[in-house]
Length: 480
Image (tube, rainbow, N blue to C red; front, side, top):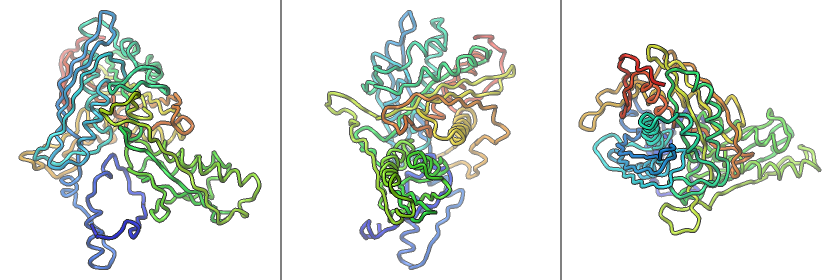
């Protein structure tokens, strides 16, 4: 934009709140840089709420034509689906979002036959792009609805059919990838089993979500640990701290590897350090920065075995990790590896006798839970977003324009409107994760809308196919 080499531009990150995919597109950055270049002074660009709502990409509306089948024993036989996503007036990452819908079309289950097609289309609506879940929430809503419909028609147990068809090591995803380890979906189902069976109006849904960009893209991260003084250790890494806790995770990893106290550590994200991380996307921060800092930390620990921290002042230790073995869609390869890691989840939504949502039980396989407080916070925030997506959030447009510029009109749930949330951490170690860890940033709301839809059906016998869902008070069906 400015016509200068990348090496002449320095970016220092300041933590700035939640991203949820919104940091993948440029909005104010270019305007600020261009203005500062011309006026020669610091510049701040501020968007009004109306401007922000109109400019920032939204979650894709996706139309789905979904069919699945099973045999007399309840074993899934096929999945056929066509996705059409409204990507709005600009491309953003619409193609990649629909690619994720396709790659996750069979969910956390084994289907011997899959016929999947996903298309992103241009419209005159507000652009749609990256948003937490990245096209997988939509697919899970459709699939989990159909699984309960199969159970209704065939008389199958809703928990058991999911257990019987769940992915296991050696099973294949819809993309043709054979999973080799770290498959925790059955462990999450076990964790919610009792809650499901003791709840009268219970909705159950499962999900999986990739860690890493994958699809032939190289996932890599570098990091550096510098001993500034006996009282300060600087950690340089290239990840955006946007509330997910990656800075805390960074300190934890260095503490684990070196035995040094966290009080002397400081985390910095500054392009001058040249600690490249690539895109801030795909729930991969913990995975990649963890590996990079394990590598750097072990080098520092080797020197600490023979020297004091004071003697090491001024020394730096570089670390890195890369995954370059995933495969592009459609590539003619012997072994398909779409993503190097996946997270798994099962959720139960409980209704009371009036059809109100009173509790969500969420069991999530994080591989290794580094920090229970951060883990619970991530998932509570995910459930809030997932529940709003399911029952209340809507962005009305007419002729490509927003009908309202008020955030309140978007239907975001208030704190007092949230039900009880029970978060269950499940740890099935991933062979490619640091200490076995996976990501939980996006998987948190993948099953939620499907679980809500299935709970509402148990209450009133109405199958819902559109979001957000509105519960009409009807006579209870008494179905279980």
